[in-house]
Amino acid sequence: MEHMETLKALGLFDARVPRYTSYPTAAVFSPDTGASFQSTALATLDPKDPVSVYIHIPFCERLCWFCACHTQGTKTLGPVESYIETLEAELEMVRATLPSGLEMGSLHWGGGTPTILPPALIHRLVRAIRRVFPPADVFDFSVEIDPTMVDRAKIDALAAEGMTRASIGIQDFDPEVQQAIGRLQPFDVTRACVEDLRAAGISSLNTDLVYGLPHQTLARIEDTIDKVLTFAPDRVALFGYAHVPWVSKRQKLIDEDALPGDLSRYHLARRAGERFVEAGLTAIGIDHFARPGDDLSKALEAGRLRRNFQGYTADSCQTLIGLGASSISRLPGGYVQNAPATAAYKQRIAEGVFPGSRGYRMTHDDHLRARAIEQLMCTFALDLDDLSREFGPRACELLPCLNEMAARFAPFTELTGRRITIAPEGRSLTRMIASVLDQHVPDGVRYSRAS
Ligand SMILES: C[S@@+](CC[C@H](N)C(=O)[O-])C[C@H]1O[C@@H](n2cnc3c(N)ncnc32)[C@H](O)[C@@H]1O
Ligand code: SF4
View 1 (cartoon, rainbow, N blue to C red):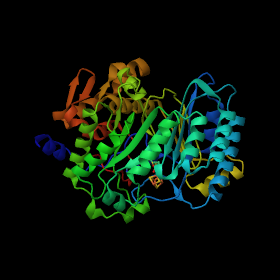
View 2 (cartoon, protein in one colour):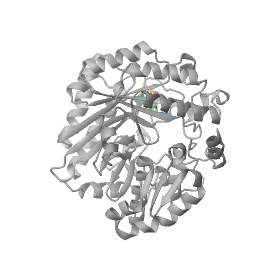
View 3 (cartoon, rainbow, N blue to C red):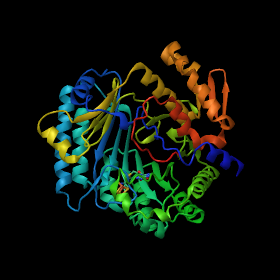
View 4 (cartoon, protein in one colour):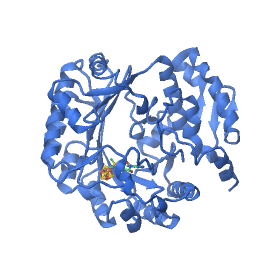
C-alpha cells in the first residue's frame, strides 16, 4: 500500500504516455514523408539482411466495443476478396522495387481478423507473399486468430503454409465482462480452437488478455487465468485496457461507470502478473509472459529482446515491411504508414502509387533515443556504456535524461555511473520513465493511461 501511495504521487494514474511500440510514435508522422520515401527506402535495402513482413487484414465479422485496432465489419467475403487482390497488387509493386535476393525472416498477419480468410484465400495470399519474399532458413510465421472466427479447415490451411505461432484473442472469459465489451466468446469454443491448433502441430501458442475491462474483478480475472492456464500457453500478453473513445468511436458503447477504478486496475494487473509467474512463466517486459523455453524468454536471457508494433519480440530483423491498409513499415531511414482507410489504400494501389501516406525520417538522435527507450522497456535498465558501443560517444548526451529519471522517480530508480535501473516495485512506471527520453511529445495528442 505504501508503494501504491508513492506511485500515485508520482502521477501513475494521471499520466497519459505512449506504449512505445515505436519511437517516435505514429502521432508525430507527417504527410511530408510518404510514398517517395517508401519506394526509395525499399529500393535501397541491403539484400543481405532478411526482413520482417507484416500483413494487415482490416476486417472482422463482429466489432467488439473495447477494440482499438484498425478494422471494419463485414458479413460477406466480397470486400475481403477484393482486398486480397489489392494486397497482391501492392506486393507486385514492392517486388518490382526491392533489390533481388532479399529474404523474409518473419511474417506476421494481424488485424482485424486474418482468420476471416477462407482456406483458398489463405493459400492465395501466402503464395503472393512468397513470390516476393522467399523465406530465410530461419523463418517464423505468426497469425492473430479470433477463436470464434476460425475452423479446422482454416487452421489446417495456415499450418500447411508454415504457421509457427498462433496468437488467440481471449481478453476475459467472464460472461458479464464479455457482454460489457460486446464480445461473446464461450470457453468451449476457445478450447476447441486450441485443440485444433495443437492437433495441427502448432507448437507455439500466445493468448491475449486484457485487464481494466468493465465489471472485471480479482475473482473474475483469476477465473479467466485458471481457464487460460489449462491451455498451457507458451506466451501470454496481458494488455491494460486502453479506453480511447476519441480515437475508437465504438468504445463509446462501453459503460464508463463499470470500468474498474485506479486502485482496482492496479491490483488486477498485479495479481494477474503474479499468477502467471506462479504458474512458471517468465515475466517479459511490461506486459508479456513466456514459458522458460520460449523464444521470448531465450531472447530476454540473451539480451536480444526487442519491441515492435506487436509488443515484445525475439525477431532480430532491423527492417519491417508493412503491407495493407494502415500498416507501418520500419525502414532504415524512418517509418512510413500506408493510408489508414481501406478505400484510400485501395485507390492508391489502383493508381499505381505507393500507399505510404505519412511517416517520419529518423535523425541520428532519434535512432539513439529509440534504442534507449527500447532497452528500458525490455530490460528495465538503461546503460549508456552499452549504447555507446552502438552509437559512439553521443550516447553520453542522454546522461541528463538519466539524471532527470533518477530525480523524478527516486524511490524506484537507481543510478550508478551511466546506468539506471528500475526497481521491480516501480515497473508500472516504465512508460512514464521512458517518456523522459521522448523529444517528440506532440501538442494536442491524448495517449492512453500509463498504468
Ligand atoms: C487484432 S486484435 C486480436 C485478433 C482477433 N481479431 C481477436 O479478436 O481475437 C489484437 C489484440 O489487441 C488487444 N486490444 C484491442 N483493443 C484493445 C484496447 N482497447 N486496449 C487494450 N488491448 C486491446 C486485444 O487483446 C486483442 O486481442
Ligand atoms: S478484438 Fe478482434 S474481432 Fe474484435 S473488433 Fe478487434 S480485431 Fe475485430
